[in-house]
Image (cartoon, rainbow, N blue to C red; front, side, top):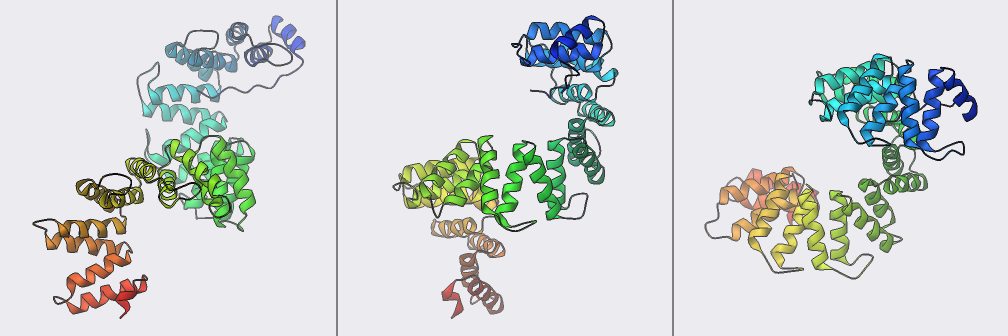
Length: 414
């Protein structure tokens, strides 16, 4: 759904109706908004809204043209017609509505009623931003940040997000916070990031709540505040952000494991890879409910499919050892390979050991895998890397054993 043009009523509904009849274009827009949304004791009437917006547009009101486009884009009182929506948005944009320019940009970006053109979309977002529409500035900033339709320019993207935030766009404030958090286009400042995420959250922008909750939970940009974190993450989870649900599960694991299990389950249902991995671990260990190994297999498989390297490794463990279903050495190798390719050190070690047991094993390949595991900080990988070098290169073996010892592998400390 595209952004709505927000127009404040200039007077009472009756006053605006009279003004509209007298040819006041802005009043016609206001009356259309009331009919569209159902306000001031007036039931929603999309057909009347359409007539008011069309009249307003004919009288030269840019928002009236833009709101006509929204009706056609969403099929409110009219059939869905993206081409017609584009035409109305173009009229609104030409008359000076930044929101109409931004909405037209979205149609070009995704090829609805117009050919796909990220270049045209970027131009329209910039035009909307110049016309002081905060959401257009947020969109323009994202295009610049990603280098979509325009050359990538982190500094200019930051400026657009700043402008959008100053214009009241919670989306832009959140994006500005991300830049401060990551030091993208501006020196890293987690304190400023946390304040901006909080501002976005207060403006009912759910992703801002997710980001604020994360920083409050880990004590970044200010003191750890688990109560604030939980409130913010709950708002994010209620808005179907899987990462927020997963973090709520992490927060509740120690004192309410059953609730944590439910949050991880919801996160996984919302396609959060780490949530699926956490759900699999809980089912494997019997956290919050009796052990459920087939369920753990299912959760790890989904985590792996969603790109979680640790989920692939955990899936491989169950497949290798026949837990929760039949043993499957080929499946385990494939899962460990995905884990290792995703830079999970334990996955590399486990893949090496499994390959070493197979007929015709390649010692060089196995040694390379445990060497990679060691580089990734897996103590067992360092231990096995030391064993691989022992007798061939004592100095390298000793270095690997020392690293394994430092990583907590006690047998390497002897």
